[in-house]
Structure formats: structure tokens, C-alpha cells
Length: 187
Image (cartoon, rainbow, N blue to C red; front, top):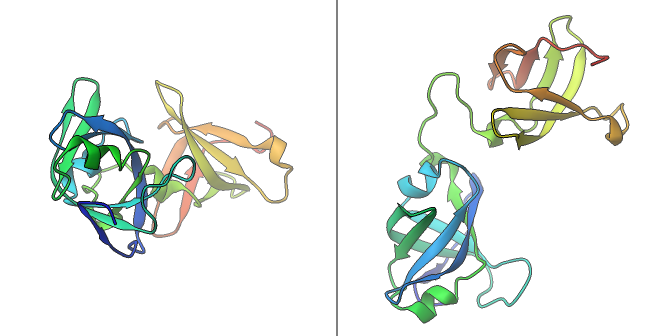
């Protein structure tokens, strides 16, 4: 294992939240590319699990655990430092590593807010009780988020896309694993 990494097992509730881009400075800090516009999960977790990049040079194997000393926004990026990663060479060896955090470390969402990962897989039903499919992805279009829905009975080329906005979304029930929408089969 590399300096600063301890061998670990990936938690069952681990979610990939970003990637280490590059070393930053000479004291072991590294730049992080967060997968969220609001990387609060990166800031709240003190333990990050990393896996090597799936492409390019692999400087370590397996799952490593990084104990984060500090993570913060700097300019237009996120930077962090970890125990045992004390110089630029150690930080550079982490380049490309995929960052996972236990979902239990995520901040609680506000009322009527959801993590995308919680919406993936939910069944989508319209007001008439018609099954539209399951959420397979989410797209950020800038002003709004869009649910990407697939139905195994419909060819993949015919995915439905429903804006995730109050005018179309009547109810989200994580416990019932469904989303009720004002959307027709022929839209």
C-alpha cells in the first residue's frame, strides 16, 4: 500500500463521490474532482475509501482507506489532505483514485430533497396508475434535473425523460420505492 493508505474493505453502503485529480502543492495535498455540485459529503466524512483508477497506471491495488485531516473548497476545485500523505510524491501516487464514502456519512437531505443515488431504481407510476418504468439515471441540464426512465417492455431507444420538478412530480416515496408523476404514456 501507498503511504497514508491502509488496506480496507469497501463498506456495503459505499457510494462513489469523486476522483483524485492531481497533487496540489508540496505538502501532500491533492485536488479532488467531486461528482456533485455540492460536495458536502466529501467535507463531512473523515474516512474516504479509494480504489485505483480503472484505466492508466495503477500505483496501488485493492481498497485503501484514507483518514482525511482536512477537505475544503479552493478556487474552483476541492483540495484535501490525509494522514500519512506528507509530500507531493505521495499525493501524486493517488492520482486517478476513485473516492467512495459510506452513505451513512452523507449529511441528511432537507425536506423534499433527495440524493440521486436514492432515486435510481425507483418505480415510476403516473396518476392513472400506469407503470412508466424505473429510474436508471439522472441528468443535470443546468436549470433542472431530469429522471431517465426505462421500462424492460419498451426498447431502450425509447427511454422516457421526465423533468424532476414539482409540476410533474407529485410524490416521492423512498420507503415504497416509487415516484408518482403527472406524465402520460404517450409523452
